[in-house]
Image 1 (cartoon, rainbow, N blue to C red):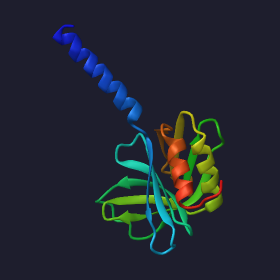
Image 2: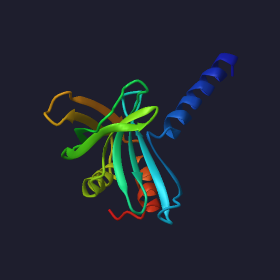
Image 3: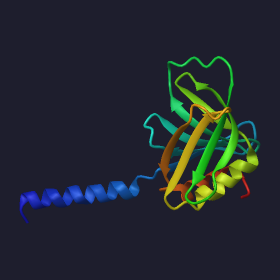
Image 4: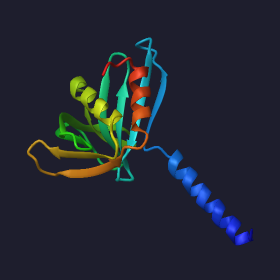
Length: 168
């Protein structure tokens, strides 16, 4: 085997390992002091490099948010928004949401509608290819649509619902 062939094989092997090991959805869990159970955060990548879809939960609370890195915007009051997600061929799920500052580095469009979030979790658990994320102002203006991959969604949802004792 020549040196060039060896390097080609190494590069191909590395790219195959990287592409199969890189999940688009991950869940992080930890103990929750206030509920006596667990807390979890499930993160899904979207086409916007500065943003992600994030599900947060404890035994008592659940939310879904589109979060985007933004240190410059001054969100001084809550702004009503629609957060819309469409998983594969399922019908879009529209949630009443609010644009707020998540922390000093990010803004979020967030909803805590438990029933709609459970519907989304079921759909994302069974997702095969694509998840569309959109948001708009309540008057239907300022629309933005992004997409995400479903890779790793089943494992991530299973870990998320187990951590927070969510029944789907």
